[in-house]
Length: 241
Image (cartoon, rainbow, N blue to C red; front, side, top):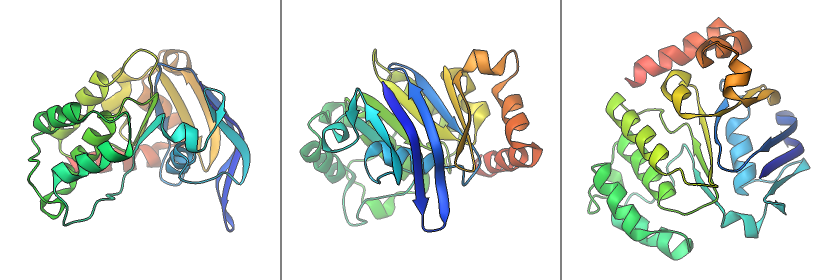
């Protein structure tokens, strides 16, 4: 189980997360929702151990986030973190050296599925191709918790389908998947738990069917964040398409 207990994260005068308490059962696929500035990326980086909370505690399977939990968490960030001169295959070798749970054969299979050439240099990749590489690296690990920060942003419709299919195929018994997105329409049918953040605060969280109560996730999103936010998300989806 992943638990956040009264977690607050401040950057100088800005509060990115404000007293958030949350528990996610293992084996669930969770959608982390909220407009820009809601604290989604901050939460993921805290869970991944890339940043430390100002106050509060985060535990995974009863262990405080730290060196031991990093081996149990696979995180796909939004930004690229590769050197431009490297080859795609070199990134896989780097991951294999760094993560004991990395499966090179799985990585090769995902590269083929995503139509990525192992011989390409990072500088040759489009933003969509780089996103598919980050996804392939993350899914090639056998982590208890997998997190994907805006995996559908900046990619075309066909790539979105590939991404969603790959995430679904990566789900295994006991594995928890945490996905942040603005594009609620694309992922509504693949999640069973939803978490709503707004200005760093937890608005609601729980089973998607219970929270939606007969509404679509998009309709609930509009209720929580307002029409302007939903329209902005829709415009972003149209631009990406």
